[in-house]
Amino acid sequence: MSTLEFRDLWVRFGSGHTAFDAVRGVNLTVASGKVVGLVGESGSGKSTIARTAVGLSEPHHGQILLDGVDVAHAKGSAVHARQRIQMVFQDPYSCLDPRMSIGASIREAIDVTEKRKRRESANYQPLSRAARDARVGELLALVELDPARASAFPGGFSGGQRQRVALARALAAEPDVLLADEITSALDVSVQGTVLNLLLDLQKQLNLTVLFISHNLAVVSRVCDEIVVMNRGEIIEHGPTSQVIDNPQDPYTQELIEAVPQIGVPLFG
Ligand SMILES: Nc1ncnc2c1ncn2[C@@H]1O[C@H](COP(=O)(O)OP(=O)(O)OP(=O)(O)O)[C@@H](O)[C@H]1O
Ligand SMILES: [Mg+2]
Image (cartoon, rainbow, N blue to C red):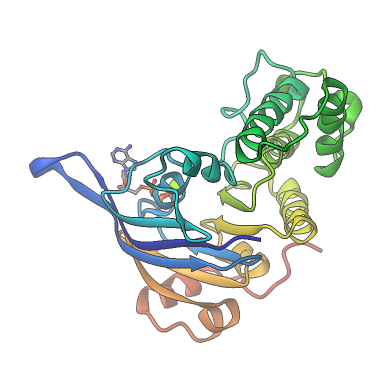
């Protein structure tokens, strides 16, 4: 259980007269064990926030705290702390190496986790080779894939199955926080529901803190405890899901909600 907190986060791309602030003074707490949805139009800064939390972008100003430890300016042990935040991306095709079996991909992440655990505690008993191999199978089973397929390559899997592999790889890091960035957007509508249900099951089972980024307000309202609305790099609304959907305060949020006719209609069982 971990709380992720963004404190007055600014992210700037470019410099001088071409400087552009993609994220402008964001304050956001994703409380331990909660699923917080982040919505807003394309280019509003949603992915940039998540990417900065995992070290793929630099903050220009501000802090990102994981249980009070600044991971945005991570050095030394804080770099390892950052591995407790894992991100899953929209495109399950690009994040897996096509020349590596899915088992090897997951195994690689397990090896990184083992290194981290050894650094974190001198008393840590490393997993044997056999135990690491067994862990690959456990993780595949956890995302509801057949462990017998560990030796298969990503090309042999459907989009939804690859997204499960990407989840297994992220979970190999034993994260406390999962950043899910449009994880179902590239999938057929028919498999979106099963991947979302899996995410929710895993969240409960592993007590994950989740930042769930999506364009789809209907999906967000179905899976999230709270909704955060971004516009042009700023948070313009944040509240419990029912409050934001039923009683939006900001005109921009009202527009977003009005644009979703199916809101309130169950999308999947
Ligand atoms: N590496 C980069 N260099 C320059 N500009 C960038 C970079 N990454 C993002 N931006 C810009 O920052 C802004 C925010 O981008 P971001 O990807 O965070 O938006 P988003 O809300 O995730 O959009 P989408 O819904 O389309 O995924 C955009 O204007 C984008 O062009
Ligand atoms: Mg994005």
